[in-house]
Length: 474
Image (cartoon, rainbow, N blue to C red):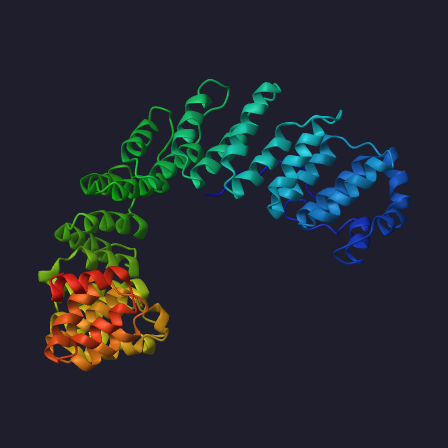
C-alpha cells in the first residue's frame, strides 16, 4: 500500500522543471563521494551567504533530496552546523525527506532524535517524512512509536501521519495494532480516511481475520467513507485465508450493489476461497463469470479452478488447463503444477508425463512438486520405465527427495524390476521406512534381500531396525 507523500520544500514547481541550484551542480560534478575538506572548499562562498539567508540552503538540501543524494545532503547539513550556519526545521526536514526517498529510515530516525536536542524542533511535516520512511520498510513499531511521540510533544497528528502508521502495521500484518490505531484516531482531531481503513482491512486479510475485515468494511458507511475495490478485495481474501468461502461469495455478490464491478483480483480471491474448500462447482461458476466480464482471466484464475477439482474430475482439470492456451493465457509453473497434480489424483500417468516433459519447450523448468506428482502417477499405474525417465530428468540429483525416489522404487516393485529398484536404493542419500517397505518385496523377488540388508547396515539406523523387524522378525 502506498503511503501519503509528506509535504516538504521542493526544488521543482508544478508543471515546470527548474534548473538545479549552482551548489548542487558543483557537488554532483565531484562524483558520489566528497571529502570534508573538498566540501568546505566548494561551499565556502555559499556558507557565508547562507548565514545571511539560510533559506537558500534549504533549496540545496531539497534538490539533493529530490535526487536521492542522501549522503551528500547529510554532509552538507553537518558542514552547516560546523560553520555556525543556522539549521532550522526546514533544513532538517529537507534532509529527512532525502532519507525517506532513499529508504534510509534509520538515518531519518537518528536525525529526528538529534532535532529533539536542538532548537530546531520537529514539526508535523518532519515526522510525516520519518514515518513515511519507516512505512516503506514495514517498521511498524517505530512508526507507531513516532505517532505516540507526536502527541506527547503536542504535535497534532494529521491524516498523513496516521495513514503512514497504519500502512506500516498493515505491511507487517500487525492487525491488532492497526485496529488500536483506528480506535485512537477517533479520540484526536483527525478524521479517518479510506487509506487508514483499507490498511486495517489488509492487515486483517494477511492473518485471515475475516470477521474484523468485514466489520471494518461495513462500518465505513458509518464513518461516512465510501468503500473501495481495494477494501472489498482484501475482505474477500481474508475469507479465503480463513476458509470461509460463503463469505467470499457474499462479498463478491455485494460488490455490484455497492456500485463496484469486481476485477480479476476479486474473482481470483473468490475462486481461491472455493478451491480451498473443494467447492469446485462454485469455483467454475465464478470462472465463467470472470470470462464473461470485461476483465480477462489469468493463470491464477485457471490454476485456482483446477485445484478445486477432485480426483474424479481430472479430465475437466486438463480441459481447463488447455483452455488457458485458447484464452491466450500462458500457463506458468503454478498452472502446470496444478494440472499435473490433478493428473496424479486421477492416476492419469500419460497426461502427467506429457505435461512435465513439455514444460521446457515453454521455457519452464519443472520443479520438485511437478516431478513428484508425475512420478507418483506413474507409480500408481506400475509404469516403472516412465517413473525412471522422470527421475532421470531431474537435473540436480541432490534435489531428488525421498518421495520421488520412493515412488520410483514402488513403480519398479509393481513392475517386478528389482535391478533399477536396488540401484535407486543404492544412490539414495538417505532412506526411511517407506523406502525399505518398497524395496524389500521387489529385492526379495530378485533374491537380493541379503544385498539390501548389507546396504542398510551401512545406512540409516531407523531403516536397519525396520528391515530386521520386517524381514527377520527381530
